[in-house]
Length: 205
Ligand SMILES: [Zn+2]
Image (tube, rainbow, N blue to C red; front, side, top):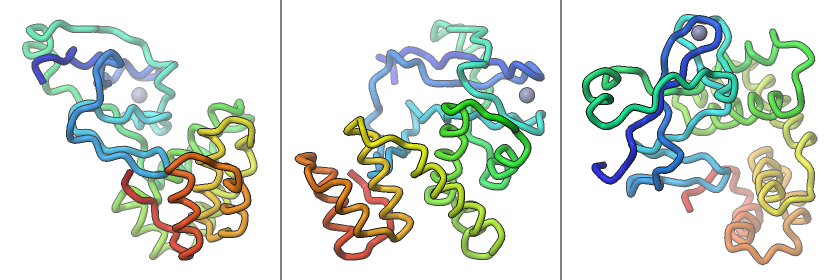
């Protein structure tokens, strides 16, 4: 990763704990795996969660509220920041707590938490297990996903893909297909194909 800029250092606004986020100037790394629901894995240029879990605070923080305290050079990074934790989303259980505890969330913050909860249920081992084994969590997760679907508008083509993908994950195949009826997008067409097979799983692009 010699051609890349080192990660930036973000500080939790509540407790001052520090986290690394990839420098947005970097290109996706070759190890990136992108999924149909917008989630991706990338070892080097990892996904900055829409809400960051803090190891010392009960609740996480939104990256836009974090304080950017360093944009180190490669030498500074190796010397000082190498062992700093990567910013990660809160666990599936902690995300459910975020939604229960935070009141009167602004629209974009509520979307952020519900989206991370969606991803936690589909892309993390803990989240998947909780959905399988914990009936209450399963219910909460489904309700949150339904709510997220209602909150997303149909105006923007990218958001429409997300909305259709949520409907497919919820098993609303007819709605998935009708939302994408006019799509010319290859991903949109693949989502329709999977909906016709009644397949709820995200797929790799
Ligand atoms: Zn904190």
